Image 1 (spheres, one colour):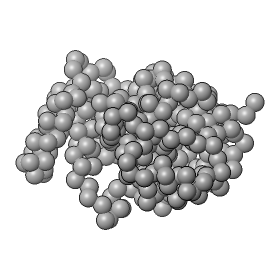
Image 2 (image 1 turned 120 degrees about the vertical axis):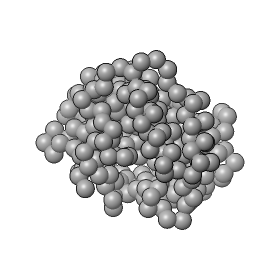
Image 3 (image 1 turned 180 degrees about the horizontal axis):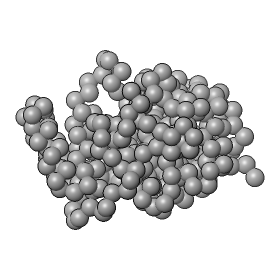
Length: 280
């Protein structure tokens, strides 16, 4: 029986990326049954009309967000509710998967039953986090190009919707490890991805705010209040006071309460943004 995959893409003013993504999807070669589901977090941005003009050759559907921009994690959770496939493949709208990317990710998941999440390498600049070159295990998986077992994703409760943007993939990965599953990094599976730091023409102020909020959330949920206060002390010496106030307010609105569970050995706060050992 052929594996089944639902490819999920959460859009937000993503029209400039869609032609490249659709072209990449149309060149996929994989012995699986797959379809694409889009969620448009800005239904007035013209993405639905653009998709019609592009006339993709693959089966797809597009759903409008029920209440404006609900964020990355909540958007994927909403799409995953209707999925009947064995796997979910989360793709950022600014990615372009190589022709064999899906085949390689599925083959890895089929070969290693404990792999709950399998991440593709980003091209031309890989993420610097370390992974075991033999087992392919890694501390966490980026959500930009990520294959998940549908059952595992649901059992974990999906992405935490309190995280609007950034660190929801780290949190999901750590919960994956804590539940007895594994997170894998597969360098042979590749996708083009122009990360935020290399998109030189983009205003990154909102992204910076949410990255710090996510970092605080991870500390509160998995390491406790002492790590939260330590990180806030670091930010007070480096952030503009206005941005720091925004970060504090956004974090306070979603702050996990109660004692943190003992951290799993795969959970690490080392190296800002890497959450573990770095390869460079």
